[in-house]
Image 1: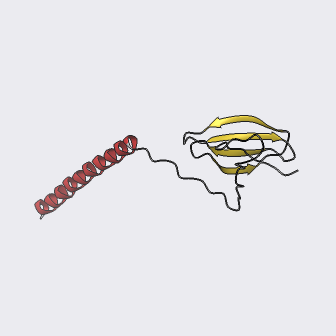
Image 2: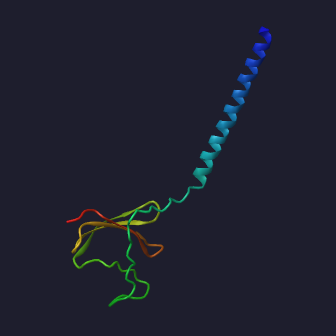
Length: 119
């Protein structure tokens, strides 16, 4: 009887070793695949946010220019490039409070607008 229990235990240990080996190979395969084919980040949607359309025509504006409709006196405080190719532009001054505009230069559009506070 003891010999039959030993065989069952040996078979279970071998089976678990095979499963661990196959799982480790699958994990390495997934890691290598993700490193070779990085996924583009998904766009972030902000609930209740409305993004005004950029002004495409106006005085002194040529066809194809992207003009952000901001109040007079608005200044660009900083610009940060994101890994996904978008630019985060911090705007200050004007008639509004400080805000961040996420701009897609390749798509020539404003993706999102974040208002940092209300006065």
